Image 1 (cartoon, helix red, strand yellow):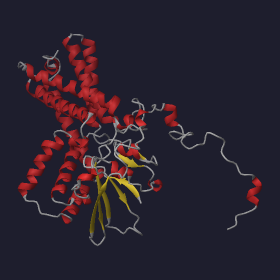
Image 2 (cartoon, one colour):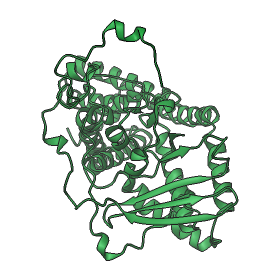
Image 3 (cartoon, one colour):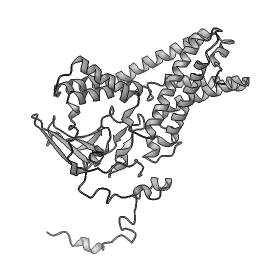
Image 4 (cartoon, chains in turn cyan, purple):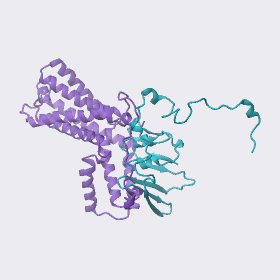
Length: 156
Length: 263
């Protein structure tokens, strides 16, 4: 499954671009609306769906295991602290769920990314991820495997 | 300068009827290009298909009165104040640009059609024309330099120009060159006033001639989408979205969104 954007609802605010952990939500250069540039890299985390203030993002299921006609949609109301889900089955059955937005104490464990240094243009264009190498603990040399170990083959 | 009607001054050396034909040609360009755009994008077909789908999953039938009330409320709230942009700078810049542009265009049409025959132009009308252009510039440049999503959320530099910028740049050029033309005409700096007149005409041609390629038509589509969204909320179909939560008290406040600037 992957996300897609209802262009009529999107207002190009950039929240999905900001939150997508795969960095696949981007702004279209012709209409300045959000789009999923790499649907097959989408891991259906629903972050963008929940972050969208206009409910403009939906998830398209693969037809083989999520038959046509079903729908899973979400409404996030931060002022109430709730996140509601509506599951609609192909046969018309509907299920509604409401949960707290998070089970963590309010206001804790939120990374203060906006307080960090702004990246420079060179860093933006670089292949290195934000907080890399510290965040990934790759400051040291990458581990190597001796060639001889490959000759042993793989045994289960 | 604010009391200067640049079109009346121009009419002394240039036939007013040509200006009027120019305005009509621009209006025709908007209509034809928007029509072509709708045919190309098939968005009208999408709207009707979506409306049909929404009607099927509607929980209640809306009377004509109720529908009218929803549409009027949408016009007064969602469209007139661009509420979908939420509270903040984007909405303020958009409202400034929207009302500035409307005032600028409406005043231009009145000035060209009514006050290019030597009749004295009322001061408030020339003031509205200039005010419209200034508001457009404030909202537009604010948006262009700081608020554009490509700049604020994608971290692209402000000078990176994409197709989506055609509309805002042409609109800003119209307002800026219009103001500059009026200023230099008022100061009787003839060469500069002609230079900015030519730039003003060119930017108008790009703005209205580029409707098919630019975001110009979003001014028509967005209100339609807002009406459809609110009608879907009212009839219970809600585009399959869950209803607003009846939140238990212990849920407390949720984590508020931060500005999308964590690039």
